[in-house]
Image 1 (cartoon, rainbow, N blue to C red):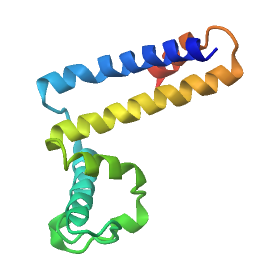
Image 2: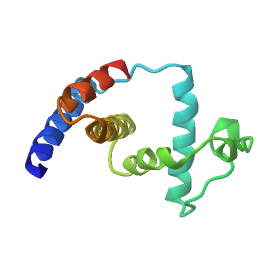
Image 3: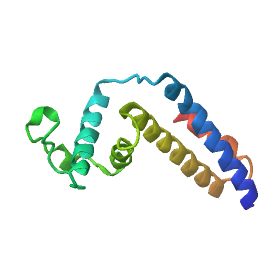
Image 4: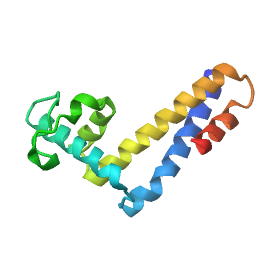
Length: 133
């Protein structure tokens, strides 16, 4: 059972890499208006972590330096990996790797949820869920 799951997880890993690879090869993003808001939040997290402040409540460097308190109202937990990846990679590569991590985590969660409901054909349902998502 573990060996079969390892093969299926490897397939999911390969699918997630194939999904993000074209964007990594081009090195460009197609972004919309909401993306700049979240990118500014990550930039503020990145700057604060760089200064040794791991918890951010007010955006003092981004959002026109007005002290925007959106970190209190919007969840930040999922932005920390993106901010930490910015220490190692370029901003675009860090974002794309962050998206890849979310893709792969979503695939794994869908796989194990479907495995708990279905004994047969769960990999097909997982890929179907991915396409619908």
